[in-house]
Amino acid sequence: MSHPQYTPPSFKFDPRSIEFSENPYQVYKEMRERSEPVYFAEQDMWLLSRYEDVFAIATNPKMVRSLEGLETEAEARERQKRANWHDMPYHERVVQFSLLDSDGDIHRRLRKQIFGEFTTRSVSTLEPMVQTFVDRLIAQLKDHDRFEFIEDFAAHVPGYVIGKLLGVPEEHCPQLRLWSEQVVQFFDVDRSDAKKQIAETATREFFEFLTELKSERARNPQDDLISKMIVDETNGLYTEDEFISTCMLILMAGHGSTIDVLGSGMHTLLKHPDAMVEMRADPSLIPGAIQEMFRFEPPLPFFHRHALEAGTLGDFKYQKGTTFGLLYGAANRDPLKFENPDQFDIHRTPNRHLAFGLGAHLCLGNNIARLNMKVIFETLLREFKDIQLVGDHVDYKRGLSVRGVEALNLRLIVVT
Image (tube, rainbow, N blue to C red; front, top):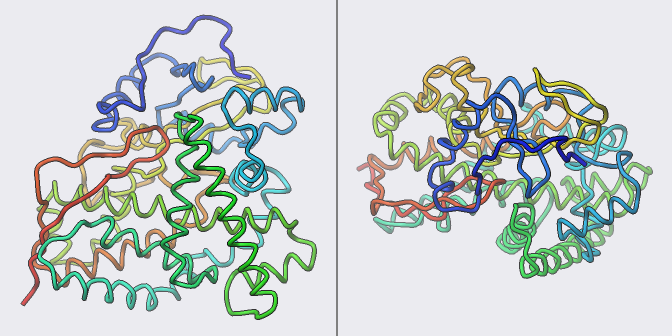
């Protein structure tokens, strides 16, 4: 849909490379210095790296997530085939359609039904529950002077919290995380047939699990979001597929991105020990530090929008149907918006980063993510007088759509 009308200047861009995973910010810097957006032929889109441009497109009501209305059914099927999104019946039903990838009245209706559960006030009531769970994990860590931060700790918290809110029994949370990761991996630029099969199988199993859980809650309602959503469905506010898709999206979004920013945030603190000392001495600095973690290493550094009509972005002219890739990770390091953008500064204010997106698609779970991080970092800094990295190198995930560490081996020294 967004084929350029001329041959754009070449720009080497390989988000699957080790070099990009180790330091995407040098590539983003080179992008920002160009006179126009970078055309990414592999995804047929124009990549935006400047804060001003990303902000403009993300807040423009004529920019949408879905191509519905912009292409015929035949064009949609052809696009699916080119991207290898086709022949995935479950994935097409409840992943390729979702609250995240809908617009207009449908998006507003689906978001409205669950919005109240994710406000600052509602989320604040979850803090005692989060603290109890984190304390339980910390008590287990104290028996070991070394542990792997992601698998032994960080990965457990977001799924437990979002599962508790939705109504998923705790014993199923590890499996939900696995399904979530298997589904989400297919959103990145590498959509091989092997990854496609993994994503479709995970979606089917996820679908079947949620369908069974929904039936159980219909028989025995609880004080949870699924039970509330069942009432809304009875009142005609959800179709069956919308119900399952929304539950699945909440669970997937509640897992991966928070785990990733916990890992990258901890790694960043380890590289800035003075900041950790300050936060330990003054816990009131922690919320600001968390905001800076999101700016410095956003866990979801890329999203897209499609143009409903032709227009201009500065001197750049685009046609109806043009696809833009919004590089939040690049915008968050734009020196025209942030002073010393490559410096990690827990005192940075204001800090109007774009890690949670903007406009109609502002991240619904941002308050829960920040609550999880607040409780986790407050507790770790209170319970351990020192946290040290074991080894010299940390690998980051490859790809364009996510940013997070693969593993983080730590040594803990307990406060006595």
